[in-house]
Image 1 (tube, helix red, strand yellow):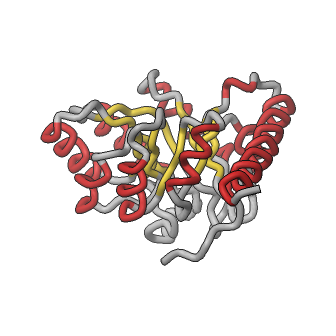
Image 2: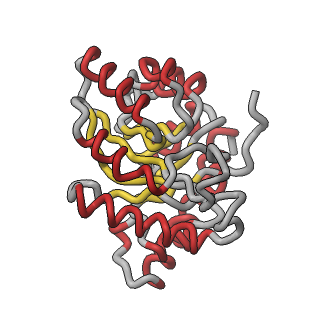
Length: 244
């Protein structure tokens, strides 16, 4: 078996295993399988893997570093993919990210909303889907979140700003299970809190229905809580090579 064939077989098996996990989690939560979308996080992996995943029917892929994502997305521009940017986004990277990203999951401050809106209008590209990243550390006095994100009490104001920004579309919220604070080691509790916040956003902005939560190690807890999208990397692609 050649190396590409071997890699294809590996990805096929891994993807099937993740699909079984998602299906079982949906069944356990009393949810239909089509309520949950799988986003494959392809960060650190080559464009050749993205092509293989596309051949297996994957349509949603995510990246978190612009310097890697840009060239990869360009190389795969002929594929029918939706590109999600899930990393922390500095305003000086907005122009570059908007060349390929269909959605940004990590909107966490007004300044970033303004920068994204201005660049979308300037570039005349299609509107950008946006999620508000919520910091779930749970301690308002702890300072900036370790993994980024707006504090829960800031989310509604940010949602209003995003919904009113030309060129942007408020699609919902995103979070990562925190490594410290109130919900450390408790992804089920963290995701339940995220869904509470998502409900408040949805009440003010009915079109914002997306809840992006859960990764390889905790996708079951995220689906049980009500996640609509799970972001899975390692379970599909294997243990990541070291970052350069």
